[in-house]
View 1 (spheres, rainbow, N blue to C red):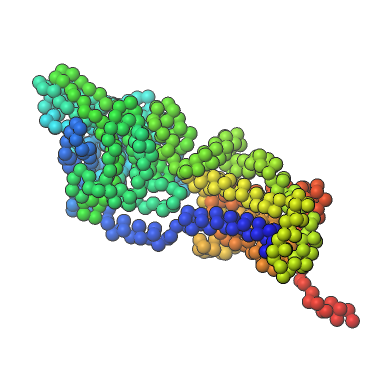
View 2 (cartoon, helix red, strand yellow; view 1 turned 180 degrees about the vertical axis):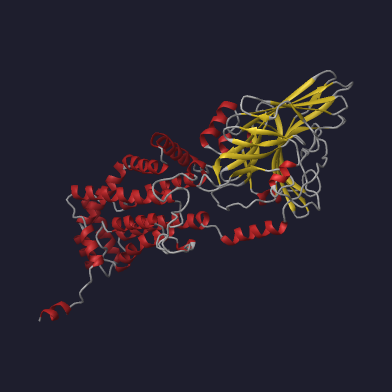
Length: 615
């Protein structure tokens, strides 16, 4: 087989490897797995409400005990979220980004909605619910407090706090107070910014006659295993940065495989004596995370508790011991992030608050050096042009210019190869029974004409990392969620909603995903077909068939990919056709496009039939 044929198959193999790999491991996870997850959640039932359960007090230098959390009680049916919220007096939270409340019974931040994000592209659809209280169908909350021994009653889930205001807004902190009746007065000053960050300063005043030792803690607790998307390139579950141990990502299934930790029916892992970082629970676009004092050591833990059929996933932070002498007071300041993982806002929190590697809350992946610059470029042009789709087109054009020298050399080499096609055909015919001599003659021809036989692979190789980076950005960043382009494309991170099978919406039924072919995938397929037809028809029938069917295969494969990625591919193909056309004309090589198109769509006349007809 000639080198030109080998190069062609290498290019095809590389392209198919990327697309098939993403399609198998990323874009189309097994629907059966999702069905099983849903069935398990349904079978497990909804977690009921419950009471705080005391846990072993942590000891200096001893094993890290888990901090308090709520374990479900038995026999209590869940109620609606609104009813669960109404069970407790509340401190209302109202900011430009958040709406919700803090339960005065227990002091938990357990009712948070995101004002600027909806479940669908319609602004009339329900807002995203992030945190919910115990007793509802899906409890998910943050808790702050103290643990310790011989200090008398400490704040727990039954504690009734008194607030000095009714509404918590940016710039107006609210103070919660509670007296334990045993010489300790607890104050909690809660502040919130205009985005997603709460600051919680816990103070304790000792008016008793003896010193007490307390440990500050915070936690994020989620009841029931949520349905995850199951993508290999996206982490959903427990996450944290723990000092020098760095980033820790545990799926819900992973934490369940850890050894027993801190008590019966509890499994997990702790990182002791670490400084800097955070722990939390992340979804694709949203997260809740406890952020301790970045200058003081703490113990971070991931745990899973089981009570009957209910599982409680929890990430917690416990600070070092604080001794409070009689007549003295002590303070512990922690933070809670509860909101959307907006890239620029996450980066701002990392810089302004000094949170260690907080940018890793967003799953940039191993190839962050590609995905981060890609996002920055798209975001920059979005703020200039106001449309992420246009940003994709512009960034693609800029990348084309950036790689222009490499692509030019590639296309020039391809043009030279086209010019020597007759000689190559002659060599194949002359040595058709001796493949070794055929290869040697080909190499001599390449050397004589200064042709690089692998040059044709470079355009494909260049496109692969760009394809990957753009796919990752479209998939993980919330900025791309519900980002419109023009016309019917109202979400660049979702597949083209139109479908050829139902005549693009004219017929009253939805097309199955596996045959979903929208307008943009078809446009992409046409541009790829035209690009293929820029080259001479291969003399080998197998090659000719591969080139014919490649656009069809890619069209079906990309049909379920994000519309932004398909638009990129179509636009990149178009630019490649223009670039190749100009270079071929400049090198005096005939452009085969029109001849190939006529040959593809014209009916071939069988030998002898035309002559017979004339007679």
